[in-house]
Image 1 (cartoon, helix red, strand yellow):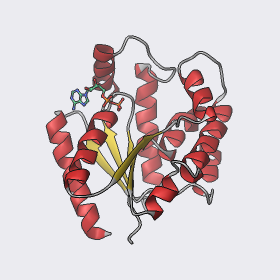
Image 2 (cartoon, rainbow, N blue to C red):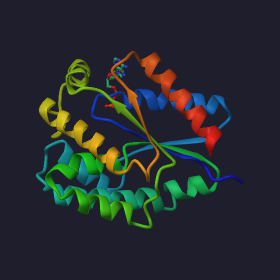
Image 3 (cartoon, rainbow, N blue to C red):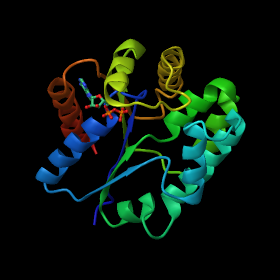
Image 4 (tube, rainbow, N blue to C red):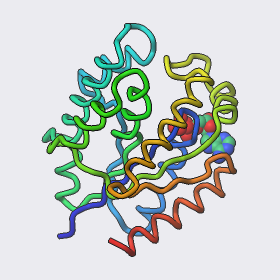
Length: 209
Ligand code: ADP
């Protein structure tokens, strides 16, 4: 049996990851694939500590956040109940909302970027995605989407911060251009236009692998 495909979505908050993941997963299932949809942080104990910190309920340094995301990611890959690896080995595709690129973009601002990248990219228990789709949007537009739909904000969800994170994502994709398969999609357009591009990227990706 062929190994499943591991697809990751990245983008600043409000870029449309949740919306587009649902649409791609629907299309993949329509094409007959079995898909496991997942997200980081996970529902592990560490994921709970991370969510507390992201919500601003507890204070953590960028180094603590980086280390906890690493731990949560190892769990996400390797645990026997719903770990990414065992799904892929069973031929099931995995689509994940955020992965190590988010650690580079978010924690790589206040913690040492090389340290954050090295510990994720060199960890044998953390798989490299087969495809990363980056939903690129300016922070003004994503901020308007968040403002329309949510009353509370996470610690990183300030407009100025989001613009820095977007730039850091693009910088990181430049550094990784020869080693990671990243497709950048203009996410400021309508849901249908963005989805059309993503499905095209997915169909081409399937043809290549
Ligand atoms: P993320 O998961 O990246 O935070 P979401 O998919 O939750 O983003 O989208 C944030 C909000 O913006 C949601 O209310 C969603 O309905 C809306 N939204 C998503 N994509 C678009 C789009 N292309 N145009 C306008 N609004 C969108």
